[in-house]
Length: 130
Image (cartoon, rainbow, N blue to C red):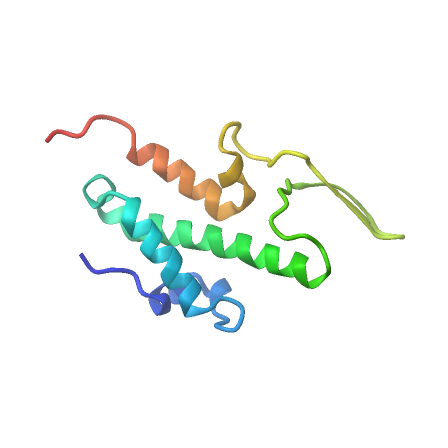
């Protein structure tokens, strides 16, 4: 099996191209985590895509936490989708629960997570013959 590398991940997901914002160490950390629990036999040719979605989801959450910390907030607080915005004086309100499919709360926090959990459910459907 050829494993996904940080550079290959960045090519396929150019929104994570900045090595200052998304370090190779972060990417490798989430790559190794994903490879430890995603089953290559079940995922087949979709494994690299699933792993990339898992990594992207976690990097996006880390970036959100860093931005909140930089502005003096407490990182790691759950935050749903924006439900209301005002222009002046600026006000944004968020849903108290994540949007997306019910029961997939953590994965609904990013588009990558929504795509990932959809694939997880597809890959988990049906029996595997041993």
